[in-house]
Amino acid sequence: MFSDLMRDKVTVLKLNGEKYEDIQASVQSKKTFIQRSDILIETGDLIQRKMSNDGIETYEVIDPGFHEGGSIIPAGYQIKHKNLGLPEAEKAVQSITYNLNGPNSRVNNHSTDNSTNVVNENSAVAEHIELLRSEINRLVQSTQEKQDALEVVDAIEGQFSSDKPSKAVVNTLISSLPHAGSIASIGSFLVSVLAG
Image (cartoon, rainbow, N blue to C red; front, side, top):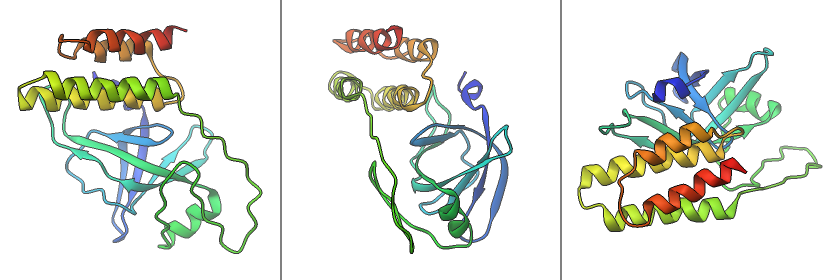
C-alpha cells in the first residue's frame, strides 16, 4: 500500500561524496518519505528530484527522521527538508551547506532579498493531528501498537502537508488506527476537511 505512494525518483547526494540514484520516494512540500533502511541519510545531505519537465529540485535534509519498521509501515525515513533555490542548490552541491530551520528561513549570499513568503498552515488540522497523537499516547497501552499508530499519524500528517492530499489514503490510514476513545471522531474531522 505505502509503496504505491512512492511516485517520485530521487538521488541522494551525501556530504562525503557518496551518491545513491533511482530511489523511490514521496516528495512533499516539507517532507520526503523514503521506505529504505539500507542507506544512511544524515543532516546536511542533499536530495534531488528530477521532474517530468527536466527541471531538478534540490532539497537539503534538516532532520532525517528515520523510523524502525512496525507491523504496518516498513522501516524508512520521514525526512524534513528545506527546498533550495537554483543558486543555493549549485553552491550546496559544491559542498557549501546551509543548515536552516523554520517556515521563512533563507540565505542571501551577496544578494538582495526581494522575495515574498507566504506561510499557510491549516491550524485546525494541525491541532487535530496533535490531538490524535495525544489520544493515542493516552489510550493505547501496547508499546508496539502505540508506535505503529503514531507512524500512521505521521503518514496522515504527510498527506495533509502534500499539495494534493488524497481523501482515500487519509480515510484508509485513519481506519487502521485503534478504535478507542475519541480517536474515531478526530479521524472523522480530518476526513471531513478533505471532503470540503
